Length: 499
Image (tube, rainbow, N blue to C red; front, side):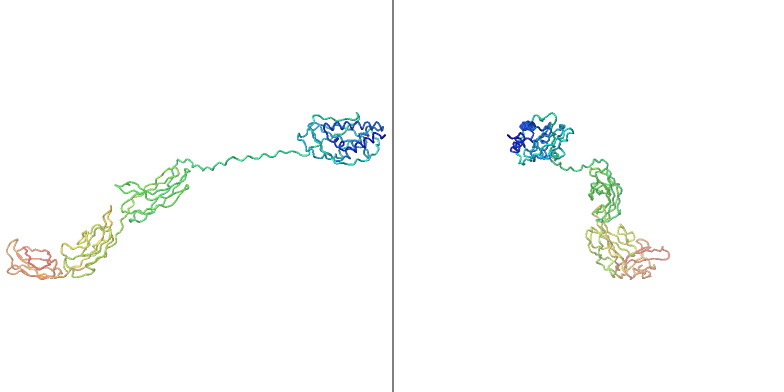
């Protein structure tokens, strides 16, 4: 009959599934481990081997056993007991100690995973009191372990073959550490619409630092230039600056109206404003600046600015032409019309320097003739002296507006009246209505300055021939008072005088 040792060996070799299951800690394996322990004890009794040597064989089997499934970690103690035939090179019987229980993850491992072999550093520590030499046994043929589903245990039972030896149980560390995924930062459900920067509340009016004009007298339609400098310290910024104008009324501005405007931005502005008045007169100007909040500031008033009328062009004299002679003492003077002229100023004098030179002059005190006419021709109402040279000019005038627009003077022209002769018969009476006086001496000059001297005859008369025009006379007689006078003699005729 085969010995117990051989029976157990045969059983262990022929049933690898039992050996494999013995390495998996669960309720079924507990029973297998217990059965194996009993068989080992029987073997020890049949062969008279020390129990420590049998335990050594179990430990050696853990070293020589092929890889098995990974044990299921439990919340309390996880132990693996793998029975094996006696090793070829036995070692002293170990002293087995129970390890401290370590908490394990509650997640169950994959039942198909393989339990790694126990490292040689995890072998049992040899006992100092027993060192038997076991008999060498052949190694079992390794077989592929079959994974067995393992239910969750409720208790852990560690079998102890004898009171003097226990197996060393090494806790199997978890094969994988579960790291919770990082928490994603939640995205906002909606992106708020951008809001515009509000304009700060500004109650401080802007400042006009300077405001000036380039000239105070201009012609109609001539440009005026105003320079300004303005700033806004309230924070809202500048909006616009307006140039305002008002007519001169009784020494002060009338109704203000807008002349021009400039759009501004930012907090400071230095620039120019412009105006071209289209009518003559006197006007006042000022500037008004406004900021983004509607605060306003007005400048000091400039004025009154004199807007002169446009200077009308000079007319052209047509007749008599310049330098004409033998002109009638009642000449017909003509000239060309001027656009926008409503009347013409006609003036002439015996001396050219007596004519005015200022276009704004309103009279000519040294002129022989100074008249206004709406026509483009003029004939003197009194005959001019014959044989006399006269100087004359014409000025166009527009007086339809508030002020009179006077044009430029025409070119000065001259003419000489016709030198004619007249035969004068002069009678001298003794007092007014008295009888004629014989022997009165009559002397004088004709219009050309030719002297004459004649004495009255028995009829109390003299006959004198001379140039027509103004003659000068003097009558003298003993016993009578002398008499002198001047008289126009332009035609042949009779004249009566007394002394």
